Length: 275
Image (cartoon, rainbow, N blue to C red):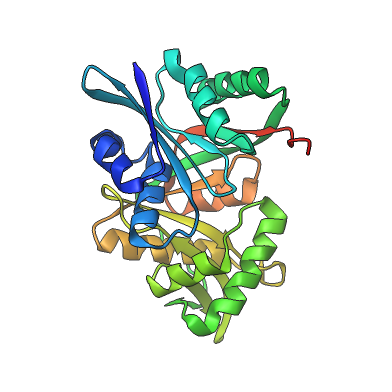
């Protein structure tokens, strides 16, 4: 087996697009990241890796911006070599995310190469939408506009402080312009936000679901997620999302509106590089 690495998203899609399409739900993060770069929505540099053997693609991984290395399906025999490739090209990577066993082997190899210790940061659960159930919650769904940019940026920063998930103002603006950023309004006042990816190999993923503290406890996030899911499904997309395993509220509301668990991923954080 050999590993091919590129910083060209179009070249990576040419090499690995067929592989991603065979299990697009499992590879939703990688497939979406490729689409975001090629559509101009993303404003971050990225590194893409694919695993090849006898003319077939057997694995894929990526790292973009300040995000962790993300591992898709990767054959066990090349995990350590893959870690070496990323360590050489992205030595300041903050961590790795993937299936528990695969991510652990990668992190152990990274520690051996760099001397940087690692720890479990968090785990996420991937969900797919089954039978959608719309909750009875007051309010309406509307698309965010340019006039909502400051609000969305502020809420995204608040969300980042709470859960560590961030996005630049440029990235938010691009998604608003693409019609992917949504607000839930009650009484004419925005009370929750969410964003979704463009469909990639038939799947769209919802993320950045956030309700500010003063508006929590009314079911707004449930209603917003359900309404966005309904729109995406009506346009022909299957729908998925991630939830922090340790957040009982998000897991409960997603299950309540029809999302079904698929698999769990673990995120290992590397010890910071000493300057």
